[in-house]
Image 1: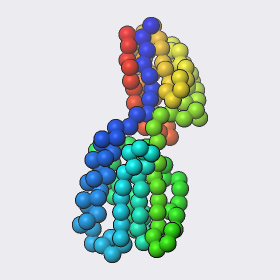
Image 2: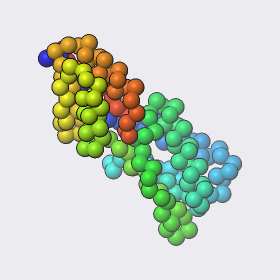
Image 3: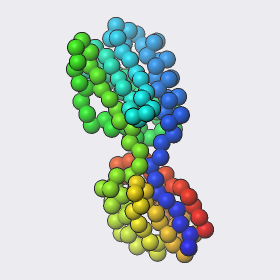
Image 4: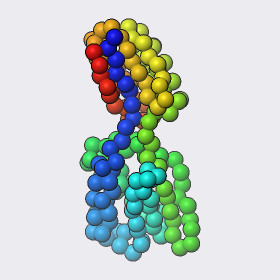
Length: 163
């Protein structure tokens, strides 16, 4: 039986490159010159830490980081942008967690979407990934095409294609 896995993997080196180019741009930004801004990547905890004097500057930092991620071909949906900046002392802080893996809710959505497509494949959830198996490689390829065309909450990649 042929199979593949649907995953959400991140390339930490590309994220590091994007953060470093964002830091370089920060030095040249006139509108952020007096804001005492900082961007830092915490690889261990998979966080991008932002700091500035005002919330508007934090939003500008987020925009810079998102544009640099896009230039590195990284989907910006890997960042959790749902939290508000935290004031502490003279500065505002915001941590942007990097989401890796597929959570249970998204995995259930992917499985139900594939089943609704009425393809001749078997789908199962395995930890933080979804495995798709079939006798036909053509069915697997059409499943990939349908999943690629559909919008989910996280960026999805296809891994471990076996025939």
